Length: 84
Image (cartoon, rainbow, N blue to C red):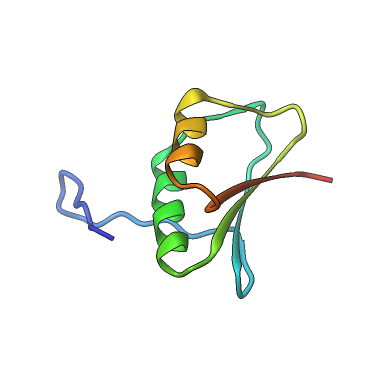
């Protein structure tokens, strides 16, 4: 994974909300979700570790076309799971 410094030359990163041995979980309680820097970075990191990124969102949450495109570009890496 390539690191990208900010304007202040600080490296940025992201951490999942929870992890298991084969999955990383990102929990969002939103009505729509885009492919944010956080999601893209976590998807790349989990793929490099051989894990899956699970997005836990409400059932009504809609995925933006940018996120759908990321999911197609990285098949099997990003999964959706409904919050209970």
